[in-house]
Image 1: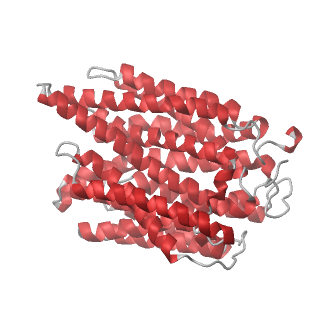
Image 2 (image 1 turned 180 degrees about the horizontal axis):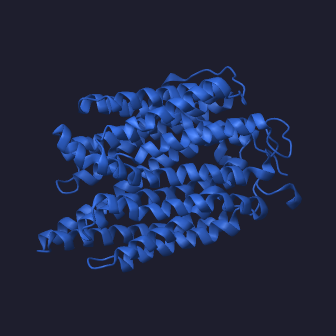
Image 3 (image 1 turned 90 degrees about the vertical axis):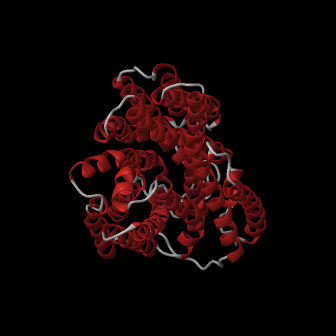
Length: 487
């Protein structure tokens, strides 16, 4: 094995029951908190009516959540080094449970927004905590299988959010979206307090306040600016949107420069030496493209189904359900295959499938298309993403030195948030601009929306082409990925 492969401690051939309990509890808890991330989209029209708020105000329930995630996740690499597994879990699930309770009891918009921000703070800690713990306790020979389970959490939970939201809203008040999650969150919190072992050790580390502030400006500014671009298309880009993007870009430049200086003394908030690994750098870039495609499609398909095909909210959620379930069913098998063959034999067909699905959506989905074409295209993309995510996470983190697992996890989480926001911004901007142009030329509302969706899918399809080339560049056997027999 190459350098940096050996775990932070000597690992046996299989996980101990204690470590397995920790990973299982973290998996279930992370699934619950990530499911909550996409639960609001379908509910916004209902909330606009119930709370008497405008669409742009309602959108803040999603924007504020993403903003909080983007600001908190970069700090998690540092936070996870300073605290124990149990301490980090109780902090994350405690905040998430508190935020969920606040949302469930909200009489109006302001309290609901505050609850979403508290929820997001807990959510931001969970995924890096799960990844760092898994990389620490899982023997290299079986990491693919365990990371396959993480892929279920990362890809299936967001896909199920709209479906579950649609089902709840068809029979219950919107507050039940939080009321039904709360007992599960509290149960996980109690079980963690009683049974979760500490599988990582805390160590003293100095917090750099300037880095925290630069991180907030950089990632907060970028996510906020991108989330506003789509809204601003019809009236031109507003100064606040442009200002946020400029501040975000400047903040990011200063943040990176400061981290490079601080990591010489191991004081960086986010250690960027993880990018010295070519596998990690290529893997993160490829993941960014895939996340842009995933979030863009999650936004576009419901708009297409409801505004072009005239399908109701519940049916839209059910149409997207098979794709989410397929990702979940494939993930464990993909993880086992990864342990046998490494990343490239999975990544190349995976990226080809994602690209095929994106081009299929561009060519086949129009005003009079069958809803089954949408389901088929979404299933194809879901199968491709299932082949991509597990190898990417495992090979990227497996190529990082063990003492930087928490920083690698934080980088991956941060890129996910920024790429998701960028994907949403690109797709919505292209949709809005194209639809506005077609409407100005006399097209009907349905035809204009269909044209906008088509243009957005075309941009997404073009985006997927470099991903295929990048898949070939990911190392055939990165550090710690295949089973020992392959070395």
